[in-house]
Length: 337
Image (cartoon, rainbow, N blue to C red; front, side):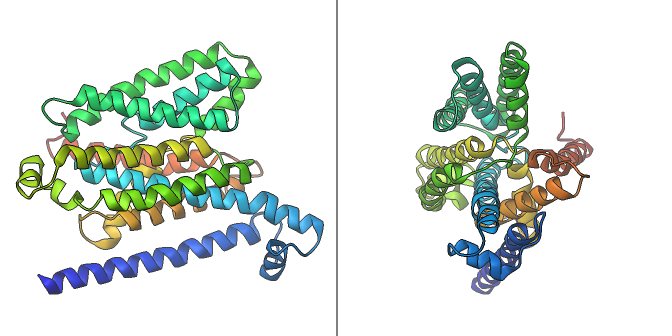
């Protein structure tokens, strides 16, 4: 068993190192070659405050904030999705499927369209909406405990209701406001500035260590409530702590760039395939999420013709077929209802 554990840890370290190298390479490519190419030396010179004014503006004011926002929201969505899927033992238990992202979207759109909120106020609204949606879903799913299947079904219902709220709000708004909200709802990195990077960086710096601390009993929780309780785990406290961290990660990421669809949904399964085992893959999932967002943003900018598209459009093109395949496989296995 010790040898197996050492092998598993060694493979996880290797996968994390490989994903980190890929992430750094994609990040560098995004900053240097996204549109007009800029030599790496000029990029470093611009970051240091030198070089021409045009290069400084292009790199420091446009590309760096966009790329950093993509990395941070990818890390957040990837980690949040892995926490939900592992904790609830259900591949559908992703925040963009069970209504957490829908809660953030509904609150942000209502605050923006009805109250004219923007910037920090809109971001706080999105975070508050995610927390409220998660609380409502958890309370409705509670029956002397929470099972993954019941929470997923209730979450899908809540997500549908919140989506109708968004649609109703947008139909009552002006065409200009509705179009802006529609782009945000797709999930976009266009126009991201240091104003979004700062709060998101602080949130990630706080929430990642908290999630790592809360995830210590995650292995026991995977065995079921009775087994985890028998091992001395405080089941409800541990579950609530993990869900709270995952909801906060989802809310802050959604507030920064909108509900970028399916990143949280596919990051965990991809990470577990790379590891070759079904154990919690929190750090690899976060790295996979960051790579997916950056690659999808590059494709959205330069791979779909002369026009730029929101990054959420590309991630949905990846995630939607995977969701259909997952549902089809569940039905073939007699688990689809």
